[in-house]
Structures are given as C-alpha cells and as structure tokens.
Amino acid sequence: MRGERWALRAGEYLVSLACRRLPAGIRQERYQEWLAELPVILRDRGTGPAPLRVVRMLAFAADTLRWTALASDAYR
Image (cartoon, rainbow, N blue to C red; front, side, top):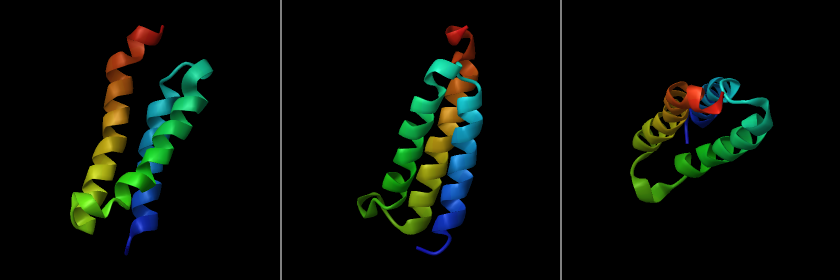
C-alpha cells in the first residue's frame, strides 16, 4: 500500500504521545500492545479500501491519546 510507512509512523507518534501520560509501570506494556495493533488494522483488507483502513488506524491511535488524556487522573 502506498503511504503505509508514513501512516504507521504517524500512528506510532500518536501512540507514543499517549503512553507518555501513563505511569512508568505500565507505559512500555501498553506501548507495545497498542503499537502491535496498528499494522493489523492497516492491513485488514476486510474493513474496506486502503484510505479507509488508514483513517481507521489513525483513529485508533488518536483514541489512545484521547483515552489517556481522559483517564490520566485515574492513574495518579
């Protein structure tokens, strides 16, 4: 897929921003878990054409960032 590398890097950046808000004890585990989901979402041909898969993958990555922002107080 054209632009796959760019899309994965953008998703990785969003996930890394999300993980910075997590406590150190769970940060690495969540980073690896969420990062592993990105290529799976991007390459799942059953979910539609390539542009839609990119949007879904970036939405997943952005949602991790939103979730950690909303739940950051729960970890303190």
